[in-house]
Length: 93
Length: 480
Image: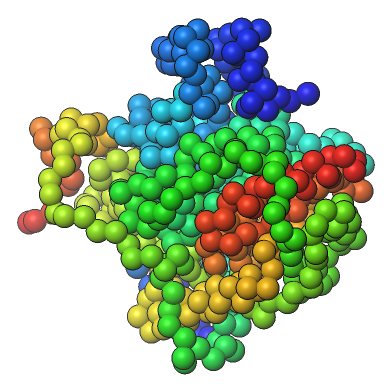
């Protein structure tokens, strides 16, 4: 196992770790990754990955519009809104 | 003495108690929130019309299967118009506009929700200590150290403590790697995790979608069967919901098995366990052998890889599921100069340490260069684990294991994440295989704390599994 680049991982996870916590998380991550490393001992060349344990085909539906929510309901939990939209800071310069 | 759902329903039918009196009795206890088992207790005014409707049905002798029964609901189920937080700061202001499938079934069957049960944040934990709203306290005390507060287990710790303290008749939990069975065991009650695909995940705050499953925590096996009858249904809105015919789990619960049954005891599970835990298995074996049940030693070849597999797959799925919490559409938004700042600040301040840790593990094992070595390899090993269970279940009808490797421990005692993760050693393999498992109380430890045993059955064989659990429950109670 190579060193863990905690800055890169936290960037991927959209988390901003305070400097003093970086080492804490890096060490914790290292220990856990070392702990799960035993899976590498197993020869799985002939094994297919398992996605769905019950072997059933996942159900799909026709792409039809079903109206369950009103605009008001959808926006009722919005931290900030403007008319019928979620409001965020300006994105384009 | 705690009463079963059937007994309570009889009292309601005979009018020796009214639905409102029943509600008030539990509501008052819940209101004290003595063990912090609730994040929210439903206002009586909010339940008033449900109470009245339920009473009317009793008056007209057409009561529903769970009519008037006060339930606790893990704060992971979306409940329409009732705050749902997943015990996280980031959802601490969230009020869903819809009802989860499972809780809707419970409402359709007449039950009344006493409140939302505290749990580990986003169901990530085995001790209920990661909740933003503080730890839940186990109602049980170690008789040798009666002043210490103990954990109830997790993640459905509030649901387990609520049933154990008697502030609701039964509760709903969710189980990803043991989160129903482990707290049930540590609180001395029954906990059932149905087969993956039995009970819809729609409207449950997602943790690891290939593992999450809803199930009941109850005082007795029969109550679990009553709840399962209500919630075990196909749901079109959950793409992994299985469309098979469901049984009536209450009917014939106490019926004898038609033929001799075989139960496997995995010898590899019992290496290095304490005498207290070993006694539970030995005792169960002794009392059940008097029936037409044969016990066989079995051995898994994949047990030592189960926790590693789980702690790759579950965080990977979690990091993906929790990407939705960004402070934009719902949940708590933190201030930021620009959009990216809002994401970063909302997530960093909104998630607790354990959730952050799991998101980081997940992001790592899914990242370029590591995906094949960790995530894909774990998915392959998951198949081997499933095959291992299928091999053993060709020779035996059920598997008997301890539910947990230890009794309830002191709040704050386990700080190291790996030693915490090891709590789930007996429940995680079943979850990875997607099989049903039920934990029932089996006796007390030398410290006077409850311990549980777990029966594992075959896919969608909850009926037989509960029949066995009911038999064991009766025999073990008699034995005590």
